[in-house]
Length: 206
Length: 206
Image 1 (spheres, each protein chain N blue to C red):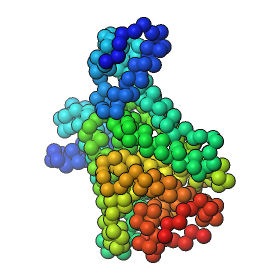
Image 2: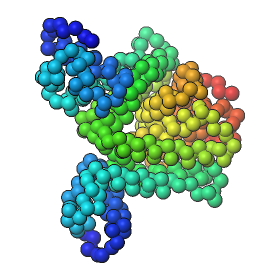
Image 3: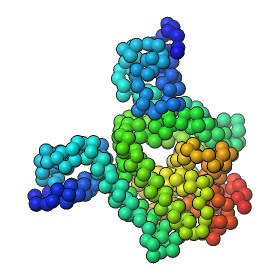
């Protein structure tokens, strides 16, 4: 249990959000109660409501913090060339989902609530991930056509679903998952923009 | 507006569900009120509650009816060989999503409510679609390995996201969408099970 220490309201709020996101590693957002968090933080539920206003605001703030953390995990390293940079982001993505399974499932599917703000957060997060990928693709010299942009968004959904499914099974290892996501991306990009634009990046599949 | 006619309770309930699903073509499930449906059906809200018990039960019943309708649209024709059969299912899918845009977005994303039953419905629907695809793949003589099963689920998510994105733009036409979904499938399957197993079905992309 955390010690009671005197912190500024902003720091205390940030600390509570961090704890909220940590608790999501073992429960969905729906299951995350104000009582649980208050007990873990060693404060009263009244004080928690003081920081977050309502259960809805608290859930939304935790979801935002989790989305920010996800984007941190897959933030591209500008020092790397595009292909290794993308691989590094993919590893970050898989690691995040592995470590925050329930949080990820409930957050990124946007299924935790019917709340408009939660759905907007889901859309923003998916759009931010798609933009990271499109930026990489642009650095590879592949023209980001409308069809490619659609494909990239679709591939993000593919990567999410494959990774969630992967967590529930034991036959495919982590390297197999990463290979499927990375190679899958270039194969789909090839369908969208033609083989010539993507050929230099296509791994040998035979 | 529908006429008041005497129907058996089962028929009346089915008729109300049909109307509910129709109304989803122009509004999300969240926006579908008991009042709207009662007004459209020409009955009292009290009678509607008599049939469905609660707003939650009504929404769940409409969602189930919409999911059933979606699966009807993409039911495979057993008389066709696997590749045209899959193309026909894809056309059914795209047509359904085009005609039921809001319903599809709110239902299949499972984002309409945080309700456990709604999420289970979403999972069942996605699993049913994946099973249709896996059955086709099996008929092509491609072995359904665990990696391919993961890939198929991922491709269903890809197809959903690409189609929803496609509805919001005007640069890519329907044929371009269908080609992206169909070719994308075989390219992803190739990553999962190797080029030899899928090669006979790979379209020429050069």
